[in-house]
Image 1 (cartoon, rainbow, N blue to C red):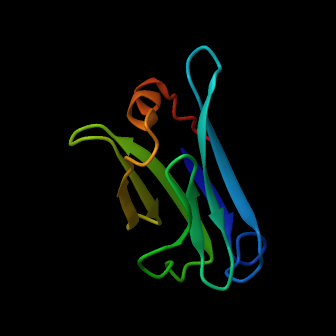
Image 2 (tube, rainbow, N blue to C red):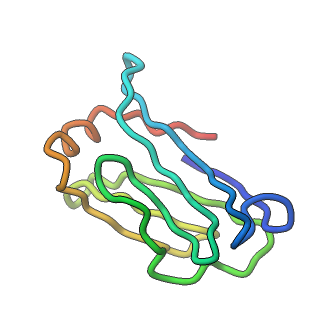
Length: 111
């Protein structure tokens, strides 16, 4: 999924804004969601995987931020989160028993 936010209008650090992307299978069954919370310390959320978590690196200072959320199946199943081509997080999630199966069937929407 690709999401664009502009710090001057929406998605500014400390604004309390949120951005959500939901994932569905090809038969339109809900799989989960990914969210970004623009608190004073920006955080992200992956449903059935983790609660709100601080990004391990600082957000790029660019006014417009282009977020790319990718499911990488090359070495296990990993969520890669990029902002303006900077890797913000690389997660493997095993806390939810069907997470691995659900990711196999997820369709990643392009916004």
